[in-house]
Length: 215
Image (tube, rainbow, N blue to C red; front, side):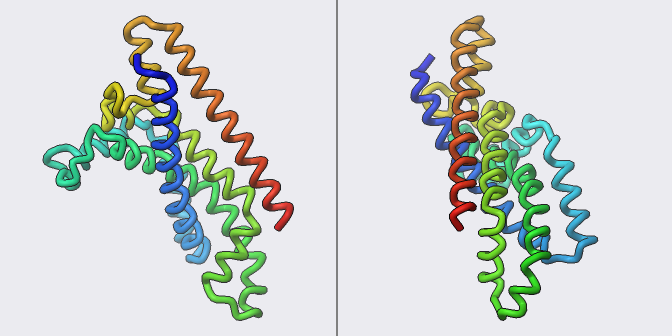
């Protein structure tokens, strides 16, 4: 097995970037839905909630179909690269990040919209006020997306291939070591995965609460 440090660093940058992309998309989507008609917004929000439970193997297959040699994104030559995993993990993390954000954005928008209208704020100014009001929820949204991304296996295996030294991440390393009977190594990698998720969650939630209290 390649260095555990290399696998860990690769997992961090791939899942960190994927969850950042999904977070930005979720924030824009949530703000748009919060300003849309409630009936329409509720339908879309319900659809997003249903997507949270979609198995990551299905999303991995979708990513593969997009990137394989006859797929619509074939010219990009991204299949079995870290970028394929970034794309797939972004799709994995987007629904859960959006579900967390939508309710918070809508609740905050209902409180501050009248104030914003009286002050003549633009959409950008209103967005800034809402964002400051829901800072803890912003961090929570990113964290749940990151946890979903770094812990998934389907995308990393199907679209990434689990190639040693290139696309092998923590989850594919666990699967590989288990398949060849190296249970001690698999457990070690699993403990690293759990530790990373716990530490990053604790750190970001602490930072988010401090920023919110000082704002």
